[in-house]
Image 1 (cartoon, protein in one colour):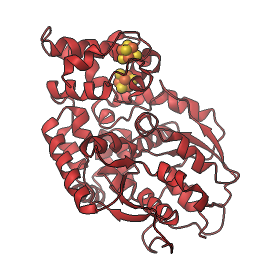
Image 2 (tube, helix red, strand yellow; image 1 turned 120 degrees about the vertical axis):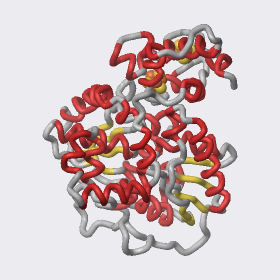
Image 3 (cartoon, protein in one colour; image 1 turned 90 degrees about the horizontal axis):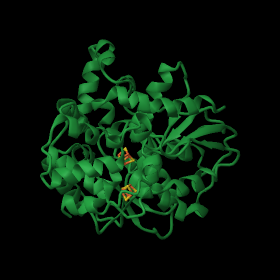
Image 4 (spheres, helix red, strand yellow; image 1 turned 60 degrees about the horizontal axis):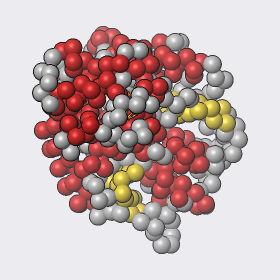
Length: 397
Ligand code: SF4
Ligand code: SF4
């Protein structure tokens, strides 16, 4: 749909303003969804020429889509943002070379090994945002486990293959590992495979590569189109019924590449088969962070809660909904680390008021960013993907 038509859907009611994290941060109309749509409309009609002042609020947008979720006029804000950024091209602050490494899991792994082996990361780390210091300090695949309270934990780690269930399979699921998540959330992917198989699904894997979300959201449309073609090719080879990713940040881009396919995070598929799953008790209190993309794109927070509530004695304390965004937002934390840290502060302030022993979040970017912030606040609160916790507590039948 042309950009001007997308912008014309906005009736300027302002109902999206109270849920917009950047409007809450800056208190400025240009940093609100309505303000950004007005800029996009003026650009699309050629009434203004792109300049640094106009593009700044568009570059600051987190793509959290809280505005799209509440809009009564059905404005397709994400499509509008992608089109506008494609018109403008990537932001000058975009760390293109670093992102080229991040998007390639093998290269990323080798680069990390190199900086760790040479000890370079100790000084290089200080030049990077906290989330990347967290990432560099993490040995790939090293689990950030919460305390296991019931015997030996189930191992969603290398070693034993996932359990196989006899009987009819309820469908074949292809797991998409993504790029960053394929390294830092490999444990969650193994946990997902274990749980899906336990719930009666057959599981297959797509290769690890970038779905194109980082490029699409940054206005690098040629690279995003190439990534979408890669997704379609990989899906065609997978011969599966569903495509699943443990990273909600990839969902929207995967859905756009494969409009005819059911693309989801694993929670809905697992919640549909909840009667097949049982869990050991976990007598602890955990904070639950629901990433914006999980709430607004996957819309799987109800399914996630349904699954976590199956763990006896687990007490969840959910962090507040929008306008609270942790500020990670794909490459936003690399492009605008100070704004990302400011946005994170309100989330951290809430966490510190809670009496909890850990923090759950489904998005690797959010988890690394929040973990770095907790460390800056001298908090050693462990963080974990909810699927890893579910796999740890799962009881084989
Ligand atoms: S809620 Fe929708 S229609 Fe109203 S100002 Fe926001 S984007 Fe425009
Ligand atoms: S996507 Fe999020 S940050 Fe961007 S305008 Fe909408 S609510 Fe604000």
